[in-house]
Amino acid sequence: MTRTYEVRTYGCQMNVHDSERLSGLLEGAGYVAAPDGEYADVVVFNTCAVRENADNKLYGNLGHLAPVKAQRPGMQIAVGGCLAQKDRSTITQKAPWVDVVFGTHNIGSLPVLLERARVQEEAQVEILESLDVFPSTLPTKRESAYAAWVSVSVGCNNTCTFCIVPALRGKEKDRRPGEILAEIGALVAEGVSEITLLGQNVNAYGVEFGDRQAFSKLLRACGGIEGLERVRFTSPHPAEFTDDVIEAMAETPNVMPSLHMPLQSGSSKVLKDMRRSYRQSKFLGIISRVREAIPDAAITTDIIVGFPGETEEDFQETLKVVREARFSGAFTFQYSKRPGTPAADLLDQVPPDVVADRYQRLSALQNQISWEENQRQEGRVVEVMVAEGEGRRDGATGRLSGRAPDNRLVHFSSVGVDGVRPGDVVTVAITRGAPHYLEADGAVLSIRRTRSGDAWEARTAAPAAAAGVSLGMPVVGVPAPLPDAPVCGS
Image (cartoon, rainbow, N blue to C red):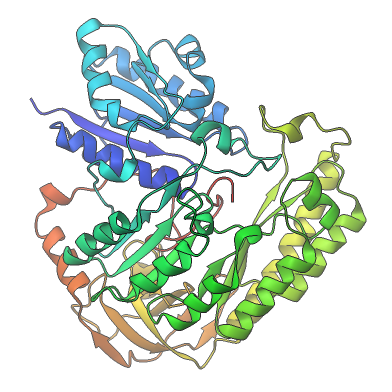
């Protein structure tokens, strides 16, 4: 009988992209996605080592599956990703019912390791210290018919004291531009109209082959791909964010006016302690130049509060930057120790109650700014790419949902739009700006049926071939930044 699989993903966009590869590998080996609500014959956990309590979450889920596996002869459990790379054999010591442990550098080995574990009837642990094959050369099963991730690099050369990712994913490895553009061209031929360029320090792309303007050249080259309507990227690093990238964004029509620019802290002292290699003035200068070149750009960020040694004065500097930058949204985090990072051993850890208080104050300020910035969108006419699975309450509200060019979520009236499909584009007038989304409750002004909508329709007409893989987390956009995890190391 055909064996079924399920991939459960935790962490950043890189992990989500890796899970699409894992699904492609398993389907290439003859597995099929397990029906919703049924236990799979093979359950794969693609883990994160950055989030707080990542290990507790993993072992809790593994413990839940132990009695299930005991009652299902032949069921297998595999653990991969960053936590597997870090903990290695510890996983099988704590959860001896796990069959396979593989790392971030050898995801292509999963089918072979599963078969080896089955034949030998013992756990297989294979962790490589360097990349085996570039993940983009592996088969993939994309979750979306109209939008896709395209990895430009893996790994990171930075040494941020709060981040363990460089130790787990290695030094930056860049793909050649021709390979990237060929993959994008192939995706567009399949009906994809939106791509997100992905890297843990995406704008450092080119460092491996010595071209400091490689990323801006890549953006401009994307502008020449016929049928590619929207280009996004995540996540850049302020230290390497140069004016040629801003110019390429402004001058390339299909590069969208949205930017995720991680701040982490507004205090230059804390940034130095974090080894972030830029200071407050440089960050604000980037924001100013982006707004000058792209006035309608929506800029989001990541912020950590309570980093070791952060004083109230340091925190006030963060609030100052938030007020000046006026981010459309921010992913905010309370600092917590991550074993294996230099920051975990720093003195002067901030008391948890102080961290929590600062987090609440920061969140309140950013929510107010987000609301005000969304209210400024009222009356604007925007093109919205219809999305699938974005509006959790669409059925109850009589709306559909999608993304504006600046990546804001838009809920719009479904009246008179019968037959509109995910991937199609509608033009609407914004009637209300809410704190975290926009509403367009008037009549849809126009509908443009697209090749992406055709691709979605073709996929849904063949459900056996299109069955999705539960990634275990919501997404913001398809694809777009996750609501509580930026690309690790950014």
